[in-house]
Figure 1 (spheres, rainbow, N blue to C red):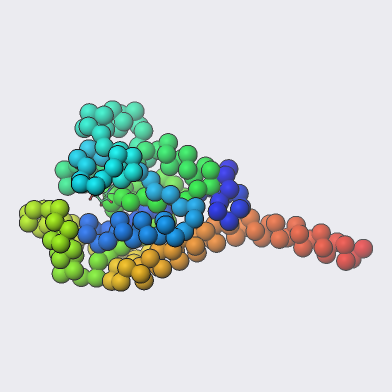
Figure 2 (figure 1 turned 30 degrees about the horizontal axis):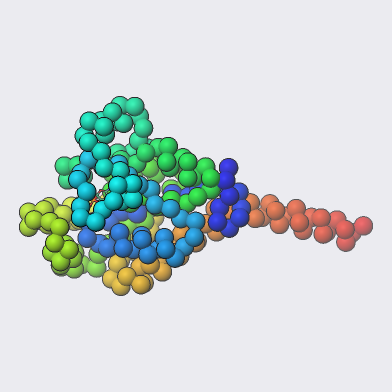
Length: 218
Ligand code: 5GP
């Protein structure tokens, strides 16, 4: 087992962050990773084409439908799902590589994937990001200029369905002001790390205190 950023031996935590598209999740995750050491982004595989500015191996691994299908058949995904006509998946090996070295990971995946990861990995922490209102979401989708009006309608309908799904997430962040959302996501990660190392610290402290106690009673 590897060592976490606090210098204690432990498996890495897996933070699953889901949100309706346009909720500001990408910016939020990027800003938190800049500010917190020891947290890494899990790069998914997808069959969709790269958008302007997206880079292979950084935003996604962009693969053809046939390569994706081969990976499915070889059981190489921890989870995969179809989202609005494209397939997306998280490779099992990269998650295992990181977590076995004590490194914490952020998975930016949808609610279908979140459910599967939670079932398979006990160290999963689920965080759902909501935009402040449907109007705000529509405005962000229109302003970023990536989608047709039909696609925007589809994304808004998806967002409505997702709110129902968000019930079984452990945490919810309403992204009204980005600076506040950043603080909240950082606080969640820090608190979960504290929880994870509690037993190890207690065992070490007991040994330390035990030695001290032994000496004083001699
Ligand atoms: P986009 O095409 O806008 O980058 O992503 C569309 C949706 O796919 C987002 O909700 C995103 O969280 C989700 N997604 C990205 N990668 C994965 C993945 O590996 N697995 C699953 N289940 N969903 C993913």
